Length: 154
Image (cartoon, rainbow, N blue to C red; front, side, top):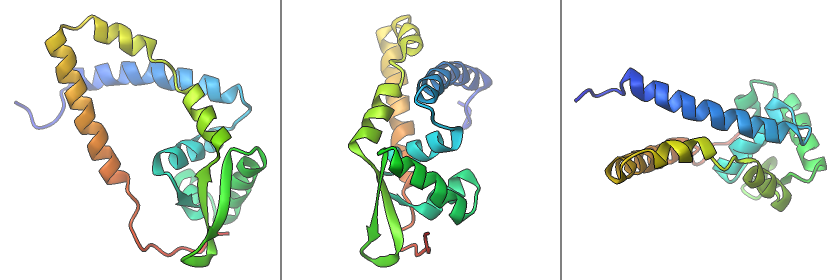
């Protein structure tokens, strides 16, 4: 067995993701959000909490520009910003209840993926589900920010 995914794996994943991403972006843009704002919301959603500098690095902008982007999200009541108790010069960001709801409501119901999955045998479905569980667990471990990272946020 190959140690790297085959081209057919990539093709299948790309097709499923393309449908999901298009549906998600269409839904989020209906709420008047820019692409960098959507990226920031998704990052915070998956990270749970982060700093303004994380948003700057994600969107490849200065801390000042990231602060402006975050400020717009705070004004829309999508993000909550609080002082970091470990370093009062930095701010901690997390999604508000409204922000979490917006993300959850915008994630497509995956009709295309469900169609694909229902066309598989029960054994194939189990294999796919097990593989995606492993991928999700590994991705979560890789996404955990370094502990003790000190960054000055605006």
